[in-house]
Length: 330
Image (tube, one colour):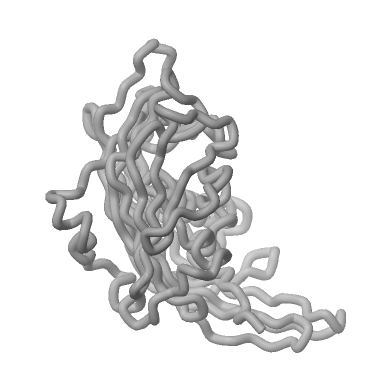
């Protein structure tokens, strides 16, 4: 088993830092282009849309493996969806089938997942500081949708909601580095169970990154030094779109086990810019405290950044990728 300390460096010049990286071209690009810029002065929107490179990788992996795992369970339990195997490639097809739990699948998911894995360590501040992931993975969503009925507050009525996914997730492990890229768009529906209604919503996330300088300095089977860089966008039709760019976010647990020791992540949306500077080498905090600025003005340091702004169902991008789009604020 190999282990991952990740160093991402996609910034070709200082000009890219000032103006932002070049645009991506993914399945989510056109959808994201149609959203207005998010409001970075809104704390909830800003924090929910904050993804450093390792966090963006975790969200993409969570989405790809989470949905593939869900489909595998359904295929094994009651043949819904159908499963076709070809060496390491699994093709799941819904064809309108419905599981015993009442979930209806349509479309197709094709997943190629390597048997070898890598365990990587970021910081002890993460909910799961060490995680195992396949060395190579490619998942394609081809008009894949899942529909299910939600019970309304009246205890009698139901409303059926559908989320449809299109796009790809790709990750490849090299000798001492890793590259990953994905773009997924979601056409979903938000529910108001009190009113027993649903509202169409769209969302998407795209990101490209690399991980290099993977070091297991004490040969204990877990990478303890890494550098991450990457860039991308996340957005939905309610909150708008935010771009995130991480530049040389360094993890070295011999220096600081609870936060990145150097590097930065920059958020951009419209005229607003938020910049987060990792300072674990100078000020290692057990609470993963990160200083940041908004439009050049210093703000109250952000605590527990590794948990508060990333991954799984905690972040807004993670929610939209699962089809759980938020209700429009009142």
